[in-house]
Every structure is written in C-alpha cells, then in structure tokens.
Amino acid sequence: MSHQELERRVRKTIREMELAGLRRHLRPLSGIDFSSNDYLGLSRHPLVKQKMAEAVMREGCGSTGSRLLRGNRESFTDVETQFATFKGTDAALYFGSGYAANLGVLGTFIERHDLVFSDTHNHASIIDGIRLSRARKVKFPHVDVDRIAKLLREAPADTQKFLVTESLFSMDGDFAPLGEYAELCTETHTTLIVDEAHAVGIYGNRGSGFVEQTGTDDAVFLTINTAGKALGVAGAFVAGPEWAIEFLIQSARPFIFSTAPPPPVAAALSASLTVIQNEPERRRLLLEKSALLRGLLMESGVDIQSSNSQIIPVILGENQRACSAAEELQREGFDVRALRPPTVPVGTARLRITVNVGLDESTLQRFALAVDRICATVCS
Image (cartoon, rainbow, N blue to C red; front, top):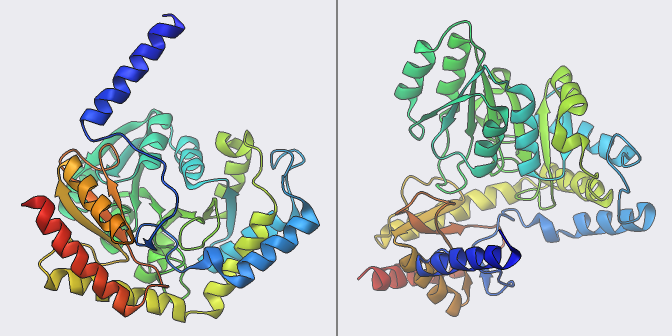
C-alpha cells in the first residue's frame, strides 16, 4: 500500500467517525471544571507546587534513563515507601502512568494458561493488559455477584484464576462489591487484583481507597493506584507484597523499558500524600458536595444511574445528543465533556460529570438546573 493509499484510508475513517458523531477534539481549559479527575484540587495545592518547583531546581527536569539504568533517584524509592505505608502494604512501585501500570501488572503475573475474570465495565488499560497476557478471559456482567460466584465455582480447581476489577468504576460512578468478591476469591483460591484509580486518595479512614474502606486488604493481591487523579500529579503506584513488587522490577516490560518519569514528580507526590493525611476535611467536603449534586439532579428528574460517588453519569444514548448537551453546557460556562464509544458501550453516550472540592453550593445548584434544562431539550 502506498503512502497516498494509506492517507485515503485514514481520511475515510476520520470522515466516518465524524458522520457517526465519534470524532474527538482537543479542547483547551474553559469554564467551571465539571469534567476533570482533580477531585481534591491537589494539582494546584501550594505545598504540592512548592515541592515540585524545589525539586526541579535540585534535580533537574528529566530522569535521563530508565529506573534500572541512570533514571533512578532516592526520591522515587522514598515516595514508594511512603505510598506503601499509606496503602498498608509491604511495598509499592511507581509507573509513569496508570495505563502502563495495568499493562505491567496484568502482562507480568497472568500467564497464557491462566483464567481471568473481568467485569464488562472495566476500562481500556485492564482490557489491554489482559490481552497482552494471552490468557483466557471470561467477562461477567457488571458487578453481578451471583454470576461471578457461579463462574468461579465452576472453574477448574487446578487452574490459576484471577479476578480483575475497578473498585470505583470510572464511567459509571458505582462501586464493585469488594466484600463479596473477597469472600468468593478466598473460597475459590482466586487472585484478586483491584484498580483503585478513582478511589485512592478519597475513600477509607486514611483515604487510601475503597479496599481500605471495605476492609478487604488481606484478600487483595495487588492494587493499581493512579496518581494523576485525586492525588493531583501523574503516574501510578502498584502496591502489594514485597515479592510481587520485586518481580515487577525484574519482569514488567512497561517498567523496564520506559524512561523514568521526571524526578520532581516524586517530590510532588510525596507532598500530595502529606496533604491527604493532614487535611482530611478535603475528602469529607468532596463526599458532601458529591452527595449534594447527586441529590439536586435526582430531584430534577435527571437519571444518574447507580452513581454514589463523585463521578456522575447522565446517559443520553445517541452520540450527537450527548455532544449537543455538552456543547450547550460549555456555552453556559460549565466544562462538561461527552463520552462516546468506544469509551462507553454503543448506545450509552453520556455526560460524565465529576465533582471537585473547589465547587461551591451555589455553583452546584446552577449547574444542576442547567443539566436538567439542557438534557430535557436535547432529548425532546
């Protein structure tokens, strides 16, 4: 195929995406934030910014190599130790992104002849990590305890089994039944891996995540904890037993063959963990404001599905309908984005609304009224 033929093929695909309402655009920040994952506002916290700026002057901007070459720094190992203590595990390992962490964990521990059970609403990095393992994957209906119980009990006893789930689902705003999963995995000798991307920093007495809140720490093998959401910085920590973290260092290709993240990121993350520990009122306020907005939307008749967190989906079905609603909200000064396939299943295009601690009550009230009015208009 010639270069010109490739260009024609690509342009045809982009046109088809445009016609289907699936073409995406890179947009600058504008309006009041109802779409980011900076739930606790830590990306702009004075201490986090200060520690990162100081580290730039002290350590420079780039790591200059992979962690196993010249890219390692004491700041990385120090913040990994700090995070492991925060999470209540033996050890932790820092990856450059949550995507890389999931690929590293799932592609390293799951082998070809293993059996993996995955929630149908698990996000892309989990799906791709399982694909890399080449193991047999069994999808089970979203948070369906009865179905996964049947599947686990019927699985061959001599096969290594894994159950992989998000703790707080990124597109739906609901939680996995980790207590039930923990009991089932213990009963059936299944290894439980939990992605805490949207829960870490918020839930539990320490704020370490939904695993802590549900008391399932002992039943969970590894957690993947994104650091670019509630923690406000970047990257991700994998937390678990020391032997598992050592195996990742030795075998996880996304870790071994990636240039280490910029060292100042470690200093910012250390500060972020300190803020979470010292300012628990941020977590409390976030949960209160999330409950307030959910209540306001439900009172207006807006269907928020089963959300009971800071992530609130408003499903509008058709792609163009979701795009139109998002554009109208943006015109009124609210930064909301439309989520469409393949990010969400076909026919479930939605507004993905997120709450952050910086939103005040009057803004939440104005926003709820705007959502109700605009969604009613686009659906009529």
